Length: 393
Ligand SMILES: *Cc1c(COP(=O)(O)O)cnc(C)c1O
Image 1: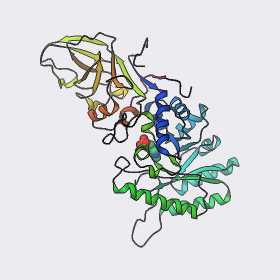
Image 2: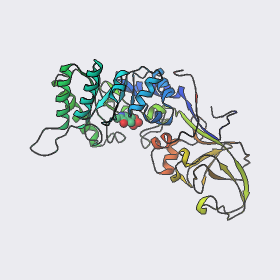
Image 3: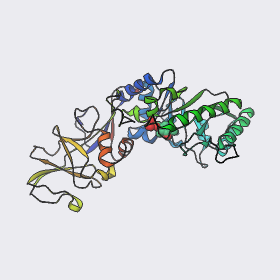
Image 4: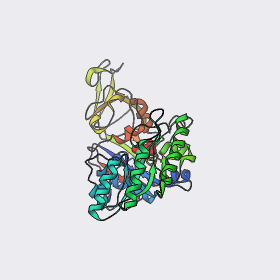
């Protein structure tokens, strides 16, 4: 799978669908009796929305999750019929379109419920809703904690009350309640326990209001792998589906039995000798101490190679490890390969996938001062994506 074969592309992303299916199997092993909702937002973290979603379902995912409505619609348009939750709404959302193709929608505020109820009345149907509760991330969701002393009322209580009224009217069916951790990658952090307790309270509140919940879920990849007690009825992993460790300080992907699905490679465009002391790439931030061979690699920050990894990003050429020499440019970067014989057209591995010894997304993240999530999800649309493997085809 490392060999791009007769590919006409200077650089490309290869995604192993069998690795995605395998990783979902690993996550199911951790989830116990809870189902796996595979998160496929952001073009499946850069792996390709539809093929990745199908591979995850083939691996045993019970449902799919996305952030934006357009992502949900794209999945339905491609014929993906699995239960599907979309959780990032703004008031301009086309709720009619989502309702027409049976997308479950997350509501963080009463206005979202009203939009869904209105769409449901127009269509003469019932809208499927999940209530998003903020248990301490302070991002999306209705806040479930009291804001000041002496006033125990919360946004989440108001959301539940509104949902119960619309549910009694029959225009809305509340199928679930969910929340999201702030510190799942540090399982000993006190907020992990506090958010679990706040979530249990929120679930109790919703059930006491008469909502008959099918699913209650809280766990992203890190929590699925490290905090099994938080699994409830469903877990909601993203990163680990693609074979990357959400807890790199605690365990590598290999330690977790995960297989990185993405590899990224390019073909050497130019090979040349330069003299000692010759500055390389913009700003001449790198200069070799002796005469050397440099190669030009046709992939750059416009494709998602982080410019912050100038001088540090790891690559493998001719079976040997090197680092980016000097600055990453928009379409290319340079590598000093010393006296190792390299020819134009030779393959340069940026991300190895299963290739022995090739760099990992975590190494790129360390080189660029970021997280592996950002590395894989930023490999952009200029790079063709080649899907290999059988899962979900
Ligand atoms: C992105 C996201 C996830 C998946 O998180 P990972 O850390 O990639 O497993 C789960 N739930 C919500 C609400 C998200 O936004």
